[in-house]
Image (cartoon, rainbow, N blue to C red):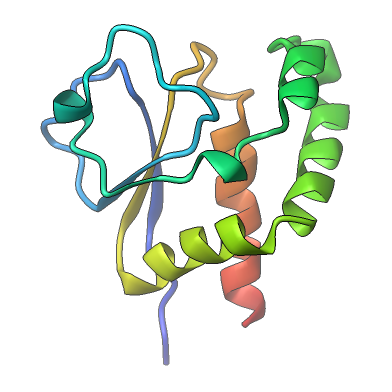
Length: 123
């Protein structure tokens, strides 16, 4: 029996001292006011983030959340290399998807975690 590794979420502005697992930044742009040493990243997979057009359209408007999720998943379906990089990390062990958005419930990392979990389970 195989178990699916845990995929956690953390905001880059949180205290990350107790964060366990490979740290993957999944934002397209570097978060303001945060240094590379503070994040201690294992990988920055910016290509897995929503396109600039989708990100700007969504603008963290909760009313657009359902449509954003569908559009972002469609983008992920077409991004084999960055999705594969994320999946490779997940297969090795615990992973933390780091994001900069203020909203912890309505952001791309939430969608990405669900997407990766589905892909891992389908294997």
